Image (tube, rainbow, N blue to C red; front, side):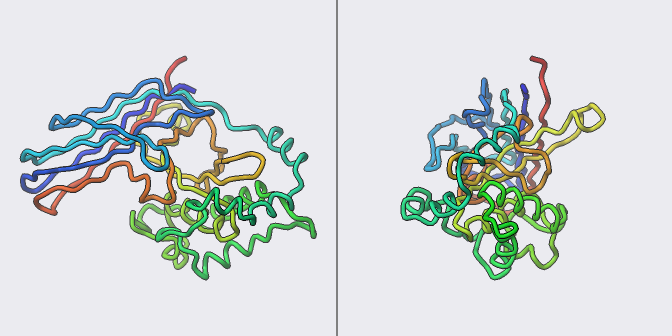
Length: 296
């Protein structure tokens, strides 16, 4: 699927500000399931961009606006071609070749701990609380006395989060941690991703937070003329398969409708736009995302 994505971030300040220093992580990854063919980034007021890769391999653009300004606008326009997710038959073939118990045993080895340290340690957003322990342990990795595969357990975990938690944009905010969600059982994609990560790590499964976009325009009456938002999901490591994607917010498999920007231990590692400046703390933030399917 060929997708055109527009992402506009605009800050308006009550009074002029100066010395604004920023980082943006808005460049789609190029990997085995997607390719970014072109990207344009513009900054107003005009600023030069410096680019580098962070610790996790995400492409970062940094810039500074030193002079007084009351508005800062960041526009990105990109074209990405995506591929479909692996089929159920392909994953079933994996399951037939590797005994489930063997995979779980390997995840408990020192080799696995050393290789995936960053994605096994709990963070501020994904702390291992009593609620997380109970939720994760309720999905015992066995069925009729038989150990189920790591892949099946992760699939069940993702489904359980969708079942027990209600999507509610008013229930949480960008600072909400996993432990905060259990009281009202409500949240958004960021919260659901953090919960799945926390549960996975509690059972020794490496998991990481993914930031990106989810195209649903052609599912809304055939028109994409409506505002869309950025999306978050999870990648977990399955022995024998590698990093596999799971979306605890939506039932669809993570495939051609998803565009990955980058990944990290949690949201803090992959914030799309972050920075500091001198001046008033009164500001208005507006973010507009539009994802459209292009003709091949």
